[in-house]
Length: 424
Ligand code: AMP
Ligand code: GLY
Image (cartoon, rainbow, N blue to C red; front, top):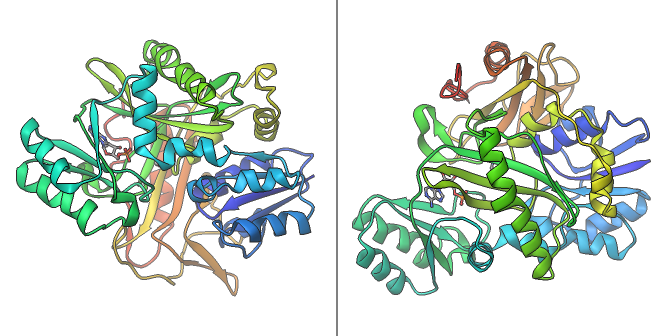
């Protein structure tokens, strides 16, 4: 069996390492992949957003199954294009991927079907957006670009002046391009954030173990928002009681709402949740595995990943009993100094073996390339140093011990991943 995985980050590396456990798969192709992924898969030089090029590659290589992982190709309809050519995929069709690609769509969906989320209004004129915020006079105010913005299109204004700047940045200066032509202004929520990824085939929805991302660049949740600087799983805030409430009030209703809209979602649906004093509410949906959530969730999966992915495609997920290891997992991201803004690339990474790994941990490669046998930095987020343990403390200790041994010039990582949940 030949499987094609689309993407090039740590998340894709985690998917590939898990797929490798299936003995029926003899070849995994990753496009475009990266230096570290090349130790586990055959990398093909096709951009993740090149729909035509990817379909050609899949046909040329006669792949049996395709996993589309990143948001852009999903929103662009890569799954639709593959399926049209008879190539089965894991991932939602374009019309279902809109649940992430448009915040206006997802907020309206939640309102229509009574799914708990922050109160909001939608604006396509900057003057009206600002007037609404000033009239409400309730700060902090949350202002979000409608479209995809690499997780950075959310601005939180502490006062009227910041609100004015935020509206200007998104809607007039178009700091995030066309995605800021429409904005959602919403109520500020408080409480711990939890990420829950869920497998679904449109008939049933199976939440995975919960996790917790650390989005800000620096310790104590300071600095700019990033794609994510580290994760832990499971989240101690996601109690059995909260999980049950989420299943009944959020997960199942969302799956049913998408069916009712004629946009059945098959694949991995990501719920970004906030456990507010009024109960769990949706902060955002993603139409895909989270990055770096996947890096801590998949190592805890006991059941074969490929079997689950195929069942999501075939509509037979109800037949599968998905099991998890009763352990914990932690991932610390090593990033290029300067990320998420400008940074230099091309530094040699020390502390890895010839396969880009190190004993005792799993090293997921994100922005790396391999040259003359050496691993070099090649992106903002470079490595995800990941460890399992019997509990979170053990997992975090193991991950941070390896972080001391693996590095490169100008390396930046947070020293407080999981600090808030240690010993909880
Ligand atoms: P999003 O891209 O929608 O997940 O937003 C990015 C981050 O902004 C979230 O992870 C939250 O930390 C924060 N955020 C988004 N919406 C709200 C809200 N309504 N209230 C408080 N914080 C929010
Ligand atoms: N870590 C958040 C995301 O994947 O969007």
